[in-house]
Length: 455
Image (cartoon, rainbow, N blue to C red; front, side, top):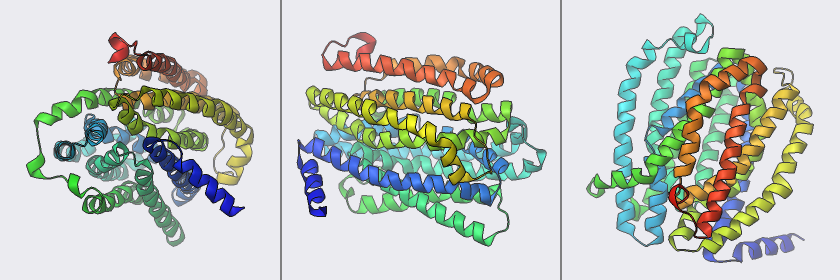
């Protein structure tokens, strides 16, 4: 029986062209790794709450979501590198690919340095307690925590270049492996702290959660440039300032899209904290982490399509892209969306087993977040392929338009109807995006895209 299963797996991996074969290997590898990542992430939540408490954990979630903005301080250079590296590698232009990598590292390192210099006085000027509407007893600690976070995210800014190289090289599974190793180490350290300390602090939590992942990524970067990517290793002699504009051509659009998304989605924790309190932030994030496992599993299959679509579009293989879109849509309808419905039904039992009685999650919170995740997953299906093709102008306008109204609208809806009200606008955004992206892909693949549909 085992031999038969192994034979089927080998047959599945060996079928199709080279691009499809690599895609399948990445999806299978990513599924296994992400499964481990989900388990670690879910285990980390109750352990972290046990290490501090539900209120402090809510404060941490809010602060870390604010810091997510800093990972895009590179104004889209890393994401632009992803596409440009994939294109250069598809054409066999090794030296050009190395120039792109060297230029990206140099430019992003300068930006990270600027971030560190700015953050030192900024952390002491801002009244973090007033911003989050939390007790004054956290004032001194929050200042120290923010300095730790600024430093960690500045380091991550530079080190994340390797993740984009791996994804551009259609090695999403390897990028996932690096992330999983960091998560496992974090889980182990938090477990040790819980066993050895009577009560934890936000500052210690910040050091562990913020600095271990970039530390692992640093080690991986050194190893990969010494082994697989020796011919692409960055060098000062290979820096070409003229290439910054090329990286920003598409990278700049990704930057605007990402900042708009962050303004909409990463401020949700801040809005909840201000309107409903930090304990509700914890409730929201527990339900979000549970239902987001469905989206995380979907991302495993979608992530390799970014670079694969770049490769296929660069080589003019539009039929391959069309075939894969149909396959993805079948998976969504037959497997993923029904699975989310089942997750809603099972959610009370899962919460009890997972976090016990430390935090209560209402039915309205679970149902609204499940709807949000379902629409998000459908939208991502088209967005990843569009991003790989590089025609992102329409997507840019959609996110930018909604970003301009997001904060006041979501704040009002949250104050009126809580978490379900907050999620009305995000659900609408992803619905609009899904319809627009599907229409755009149809035009591109039929060679009928013109104007904004082809930019």
